Image 1 (cartoon, helix red, strand yellow):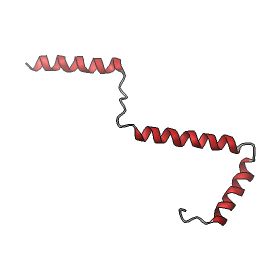
Image 2 (image 1 turned 90 degrees about the horizontal axis):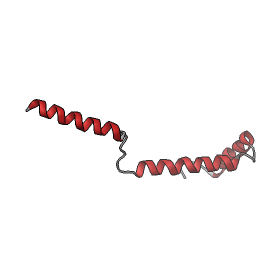
Image 3 (image 1 turned 90 degrees about the vertical axis):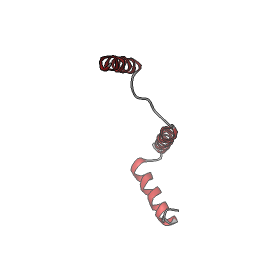
Image 4 (image 1 turned 135 degrees about the horizontal axis):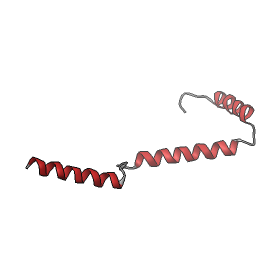
Amino acid sequence: MFGIGTTELIVILVLVLIIFGVGKLPDIGSGMGKAIRNFKKATSDTEIDVTPKDESQKLSSSAEKSNKEKV
C-alpha cells in the first residue's frame, strides 16, 4: 500500500491523534471526504462553461458586427 508499512501507519495515526485530538477527527474526516468528492466531481465533468450568459451574448453580437463590417 504505497510503500507504507503497518508500523508507519500506526505512527501516523498516533501523531494525528496527538495533534488534533479525538474530538476533531470526525470533522477532519468529513472535510476530507467532501473535498475528495468535489474533486472527483470536478474532474469527471467533461466541459465547464465559465462565461456568464450576458457576456456570451455580448460576444456573439460583437462577432456578428465584426462579420458585417468585413462584408
